[in-house]
Length: 197
Image 1 (tube, one colour):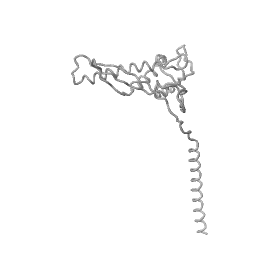
Image 2 (cartoon, helix red, strand yellow):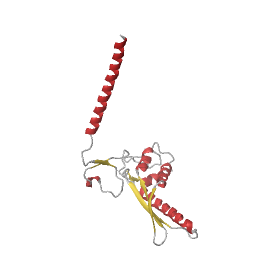
Image 3 (tube, one colour):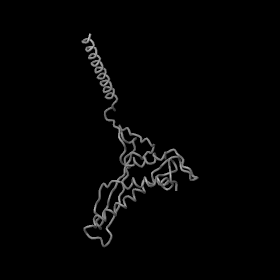
Image 4 (tube, helix red, strand yellow):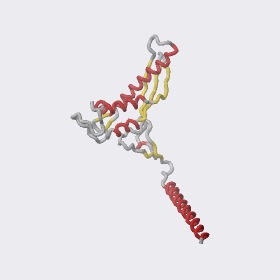
C-alpha cells in the first residue's frame, strides 16, 4: 500500500510537470504567431524633424498614453557662449561651455513652452499659470543632455543639447493636464494642480 501511495504521488508530480510544459509551449507558440509581419516595426518618434507616419511605409507608431502628439519626440537646441573678459586662459574653455549651455537651455525652454496642449493652451501658458508645473518642467529642462560642442571661429563655443519630451508629458499628466481639458479662466486650479499663481 505504501509503495502504491508513493507511486501515486510521483505520477501526480509528473502529470503537473507535463501540464506546465504544455502551457509553456502553448504560450510560446501563441507569442511567436502574433509577431509583426516581416518589414513592420513598432517605433517611437525620436526627432521633431522626422516625416509623419503616413510618409513612412511599414511603420506602426506607438501612441503616448497622455495623448500629446509630441510626447515621443526629442527636442534639440543649440547655444553660443564665450568666456567673460579677464577669465584665466585655463578656465576660459569651461566658462565658454557653461555660457553656451545656459544659452542652449534658454532656447530649449522656448521650444518646450511653444508645445501645444489642447486647442488653446501651450506648455508655456500652463507654466505661467501653475508654479508647481513650471518648476517641474524647468527642472526637467535643466537635465537636458549635452550632445556636442564646437569651437567658434571668432572665439567661444557652440553647444547642442537635447531633451526627450516623454518626461514633460508625464509631468503634465501627473498634474491631470490633458489635451482635451479646458483650463479655468477664473483662477481656480483643476484637481491635482496646487500652487496656482
